[in-house]
Structure formats: C-alpha cells, structure tokens
Length: 393
Figure 1 (cartoon, rainbow, N blue to C red):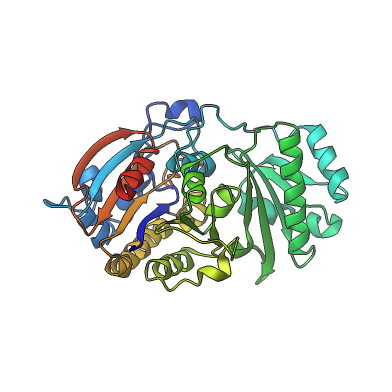
Figure 2 (figure 1 turned 60 degrees about the vertical axis):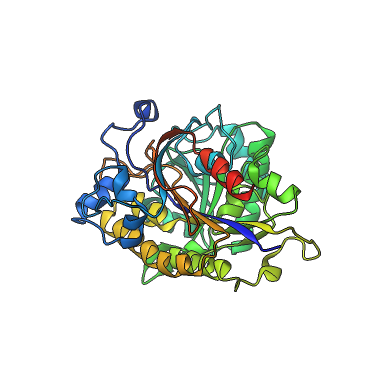
C-alpha cells in the first residue's frame, strides 16, 4: 500500500490575537503576534502562506486576501488553561489540559532548591528568580565562574531553567542536573511543565546561548493521539523539540535541531523520503504500517525573536519558512496532508518578554480536494487531530 502521511509544522508562538480570557494570564487584549510583526515590517513577503489563505483569516498588512485559497483556513481557540509550549503542543496532539501548570513568580520553594543542591552536589545555585535568559547569564556570568554554581531561573511560564557555561561545567553534567530537577519536580508534585537546559559559552567576550544544545525535559503527557498512532504501528517522526515536549511518549523517530533552517531542511528531507530514519529510530527492529506523521517545531520565532522583542527578526523567520514551503509542497504527493499552525503567542511588540495568550492560525493543505476555504473559528487546537484522523481514514 502507498504511504499516507500527515505533516504538522508548528511556527512556534505565531499567535493571531488575544483570547477573551487573556487578562487572566497577564496579557493585554491588543496582543496579536502576526498582526504586529506584519505592521512593524510594513508587510511580509509570504506568497505561499498568502496563497494558502492566511490573509483571509484577518487583516495582516502586506498579506493579500485571495479568492480561491489552496488550503482550508481556520482560527483555533485554545481549550487548555495555559499559554506555553507544552500545553499548546499537547492540545494539538489531542490532550486538553484542564488544570494549568504552576508558575513560580517568586522563585522556587526553598526545600526544592535545597534538595536540588543536595542531589546534584552542585554546591549552590544562583538567582532562583523569574528572569530573561539572555540577561540573567550576562548579569551572573562572573559569579557563575567564581562559584561554579548553576544559574537557576524561571519565567511567567511553568519552567525550571538551568544555565551554565559548558566550557566551565560539561554539557553532560547540565543534562544530568536537568534530569535530577525533573525527578524532584515530579516526586514533589510541583506541576512544572518543563525543565530546560540552557547551555552557553563566552563568544567574542559575551555569554551566548547555544541553541543546538538546548534540551527540554517535559512532564510526560498521559496519552495523546501520538500514542494512538505509535500503538497502531504508524511512524511518528519528531523534528526539533517535539521529542522533548512529549517526553518521547508516542514518538518512534526523533532528531533535534539547532535552528529553523535545520528544522526546515530536515522536514523537506522527510517529505522527500530522504531522511535516514534508521539512524533516528528508537527501535530499529520495529516494523510499521503505511501511515506516518511528521511533526516539526520551528522554535526561532519564539526563542530568538518573540522573547527578545525583535519583530524584524520574527518577520524574517516567517519569510524563511514561507520560502521553504515551495519545495516542501512540490515534494508532497496526493497522499500527503500539510497542517501549518502555532502553539501560543509571543507578541514582540507589546510590553514584556513572555508568551501571550492568543488564538492561532491553522492552514490545512493537500493536493487533493480535501478542505478548502474558510473553516471558521474553531474551539480547540485538538481540531488538528480530527483533520488528521479524517485524512487517514
């Protein structure tokens, strides 16, 4: 049987407008990541997204409305109580989080930090406050080098982040400390979504984060559509930080990326059947049916540009993604479904550096007549699972 595939590309944080409850999450009703990025850049050059109908969803400067869009297009409203990567991706995969992850605006509890110091034998920690990752490593780098203590910090999201200079302390030690933090958080039921390894080095005299070596240690999801696919013998190929977001649950193949460009190249290879799946398989002896899901996260929009209030860089990243859509779409067969979406917002043009509680776009494309035109405003990112199930069936 011919292989039937679905491809999900998540443009991390490309929200399209505040949700009604945004104030409950500390956000202003004006937040609209894509709209503001378009305005700042006097429009974006995104001919593929335009043809697919993203400009038909709402007014985005420089993106035209088209009469016969090549895709079905929708606005998705999050059901889950959150505005973070884990919550958004889990819901995309069918798992709605009724209870929000816990945040720590005053830093983590003393007893947790003491257990972390004891279990890791790291001697102590620096910071233990909410902070911007780029700023905190600049502020505390000298003290980090003097004490060799890791820098532990959080944000408005539910994250326990550990930063250190890997020329001072080995990268593997950072990963080990993150695993210990994950165990402690799970043992104590602190309800923290992710532990994030934030390695950096001194480059040209400045502490600089090394994106390719970042790792996320997520709370394991109970059960998602990815588990259904894997359990039924389908391939689930995770590109970028997808493997970490799902704590490997429901994944059969995984490869990390250091940049959007790398993630896009790998996605293109996967669509062209040129990705060496044997080398990234969890189980090289497994056999699979004719269905597969390629699931890609493109993180630069969020990590490099949203959080750093850089709408120019954000716009350039969206344009780069659009350029790659040309060869990706060309490589697709009649048996492929492409879904482009986002997981939350991170508006670089409003005050603050944190995620924003936003609706997200959803473009559903196939070369066959499947879904075309306006699909409306739909409740739940988990509508994506419905689209894929329909496609496979």
